[in-house]
Length: 176
Image 1 (cartoon, one colour):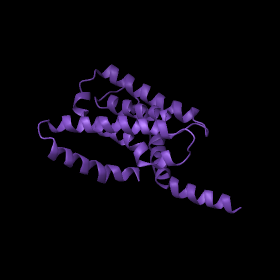
Image 2 (tube, helix red, strand yellow):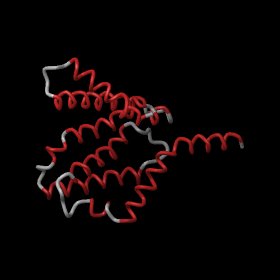
Image 3 (cartoon, helix red, strand yellow):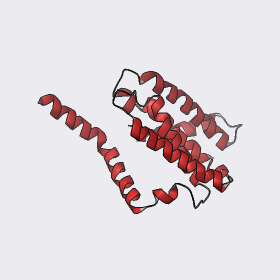
């Protein structure tokens, strides 16, 4: 459901705003739209997550901000090339650290996505932004290693199958 936003909702929204708001530059329009989506969807995610296990996790309304952050990075990528390389390299390591921090500390009772989703999203954003200027000492050195690449390919496949697998497991568990 979340991915469909990228293919259907975002282009429709951008076309609508492009037609309605003509006095702004395209990049300015996109930045305003995506920033508004980040703020509203993240707020909804934080408010909806406590006490509810599944709905905020699979809802496109509570997860849209994550795609919008990626959109903001893509639209503004040219600006990131000017980041000094030592800062960019540091950003990638800090970003990877944020992703690993949540991966190592998340527990079943934590309301997710909520506030906790900000760690991997911010971390991933830092890795991507910091990796925009070509650096030789950034986290991309580690991330380009064959075992890490294999893990990335494998985990993405698991991500795509997680909901069907969870539904089957829940059904199997409840029938026992």
